[in-house]
Every structure is written in structure tokens, then in C-alpha cells.
Image 1: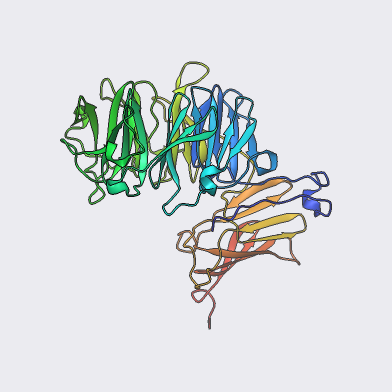
Image 2: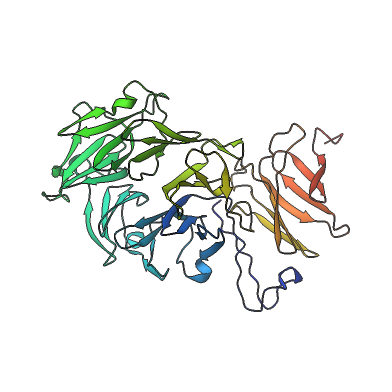
Length: 445
């Protein structure tokens, strides 16, 4: 289903693309599905699967960076900025890496992507220590030199040199901590860390199990324990000298930690199933709970965030949301500021129909097994270079699943037809549903 959607404008383009010159390729990709975000100076970079959007904090005008103008791949998983040299790592689902320098010149590093390996090469998170990037991978840890653009070392840290899914790495002085699916591991850089025997599973006052992440907050190491057997039993542990303790403000407080959130100075955060929650480490006070977008609650769609001061000195939160896209909120305020970009609502594409200057795109398809994807995505329509998103609901007001085909009526340009795996044929007039054709609405079907 991860089908990239690009509409190309070439010499023989239809009139709908007449504003684009011959031989020019133009992307019409979505900014409504955002997965990762970072910041460099006053510029914000966010991923939308098929590429990046670059936003100036003051002007708020988005620019696109994609395969058309320099990126080497699609399927952007993470974007992270190294404060040591201001280089941005663009990390893809297939472990390919693009590196953007301060002038946005792009250099590709495909070494991890091309490496033959038995385990999962997916890169879960990045932690920087000067020029080094510690890549938490599905099999262990890769240490990547962001100055030389080369792999410095690889750590297989599991028991008996077994492959281990590492969620995140934190560094403090000579110590390296790794949050994994079976517990918290610790190694010392004064030893040879590519020897698994020099990695120890911390069990002193620390439960075994899944750890969603580990972070350094102004020299304090916090480990995020996630009890996957029951909700609201997750907690945060703080590393003291040679042992762990529950972070005092959370000693008797249950959490539901899905993944780690951003750290900024004394602020740290987590994502639960609805919210980004931000605390002050020094006081333990909850500073912010972001759980709505323009009064709409989204469940599990917040994928990433970045916290820092903006150009005017205010603490700002940039949130990457897989449904609502990229938006900004200020500390202590609930008002959201979305980044609007003319494009499709999501990256999903099954068929495209073009007629009389109107482009219609359906999102889903039927698998070879005959099953659908249970996708509740609507239809994208473009007229006069302007995209509109049509959210499709049935007579019961529930979102219709798996709209697999769309067709512009050749006799009446106001009419459009769509096919759904679960709801039959749908008739639109002026981009609004006017009738359903299924066993519940048509006698004899």
C-alpha cells in the first residue's frame, strides 16, 4: 500500500497541467500525513513519506524537497539534526540515508541499505554525541560518523551476540545506554563495545521488559519502561550512580508510554495513545498536554515532535501528525498553527481518473487474496490546480472503508462515481455524496 503518488507534467500533458512547462516534473504529494520533524536554526524540516517540507518559522511558507530536486529515495522514516555540525540526517524505511549540509546540499549514504544482513535493518531513532550518530536499529547499534559520512562501528549487544531490537540510545560521559525490547543495556566506551560481553543488562531495581526509549536530560539519564501486558503501568526510571530509581514525581503515577518524545534543556516528554505530554525535569511539573488539533482528538496519530525556542524566544512545539500534518503550538497555549500545502490528503493511491480538467484519486485497492486494507481514507480531487479532500461517510455516518476506484462521469462533469469494497457504488454531485448503490439501498441486489 505504500504507493508513492506523483503526477507528471510532460510535453503531452492534459490541459489540467497546462500551467506547468513541457518536460517539467511536478509533485502533488501530501503534507497531511507527517511522520517526523526536526529544526535547524529558524528552519523546520518535516517528513511526509515521499520527501520533506521545509518551513521558515517566521514566514511559514513551505518548500518541498523530494526526489525531483535531490533526495535519493522515498519512504522517509526520520529526520534528525546534529547540533555539532548542523547536518540533517534523512533516514528512510529501507535504512538509506541522505545527509543535508547547512546549504541543503544532499549527499547519499547507502551503505546500510546495501548491506546484506539477517536481521531487521530498520533505524528506530538517532542520538548524537558530537560528530557521532548512534543509530538504534532493529538488530543492534550502528555508530555513524556525520563528518566523514562513514560507519565507525557496529554493536551487536544481545545475549550470546544475538540480534536485539534497540529502540533508542543515550550517552553520558563514557556510558552508553540502550533501550531494548527485553530490558535496559549499559556499556562503557572505555571497553570494546563491539564485543557483546561488554554490554550488561541492568537489573538492579529495574524491571526486565520493553523499554520505549532512553534519553539524556541535562546530564540525567531517564529510561522509559513500557509494560506491554497492561496499560497505565508504564513509568520513568532515573539512572543514579550504578543503579536505577523511579523518577520521583512518577513513583506512584501510571503512564501509557507509546514512544519517547523530544528533549529540550530541562524539558522531556512522552507520547501516549492520544497525547504529547511534556514535563519539567527539575520540578516534575506537567507543563503541556497536547491531545487535540483544532478541538479534534486524534488517537495514536502523533508520530513525532520537536521542542525549542523560536525566533522570539517562546517555547514552541512542532508536531508531526500522521492525520493532521505538521503544526505548531506554543507552550501553555492550545491554539494550533498548521502548515498548509496544496496537495493530496495522504500518500495512498489506487487509481487516477482525469477528465475535463478534473483529477480524481482513489486511495485503496483489493489485495491478491481478495481482502481489502480496511483503509478509511477518502478521495482526492484536483481542479484548477487546487486539491480538495472528500471525506466519505456512509448513511450510518461511519467512514467508508476501501474506496478502490473513482471515475469522472463523461456526460455530466458535476457527477463522479466511486467503488467501495464494503459499501458498494457511490454517486457524487459537486463533490458531495448524493446516493449509495448497495444491497441496503437497491432492491434485488
